[in-house]
Image 1 (cartoon, rainbow, N blue to C red):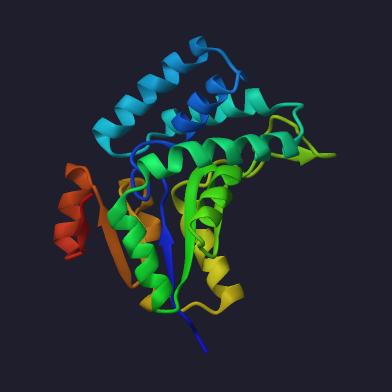
Image 2 (cartoon, helix red, strand yellow):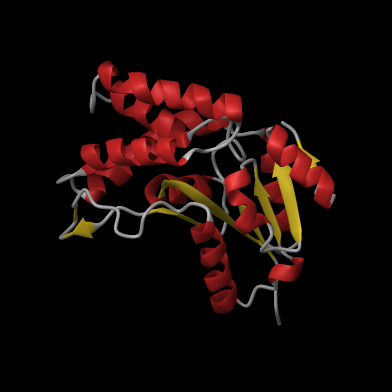
Length: 221
């Protein structure tokens, strides 16, 4: 029996703003990095919220900074740090409308997944806190329990999101033609058009035009 699933972007969709930015702030709070490291990422966060989209440059920069931080560090340490940081920021920035949507899908028996360019460690913890089925995100290489500083498969972005849910559908038996996707970003069009029920969340002007043309529902926080 083929089942339905709902796929959610994380940044500016489930949460207000960038999870990487909140992670960097959390690292400062826990003494892992200095405030000086925050300046460029703060600018990226401001631009991200204004444009309500992700640029390749912003993603590459944030990913590079996290890889620099993680290099040679034990994965166990980063996961424990992620848990502390998510516990702090998630209740403050989770968009209530989207939490209701997750609960609605769960009540209908749908699997619920986060699909994000943010680090997989963050994504999995958020999914666990929200009692979702699971998460896919950008995965740093781990060798003998420590991060190498490399991102061998690149960021979970654009076409990779669409490829991921198609592979997942094959494994889980999802009927994508009756499944759902939620995103704020024009970069997620490959994800959105992969399902029969795309929903747009807090869109910018460009994505609003596309949504209206295709008669896709638009949700606002």
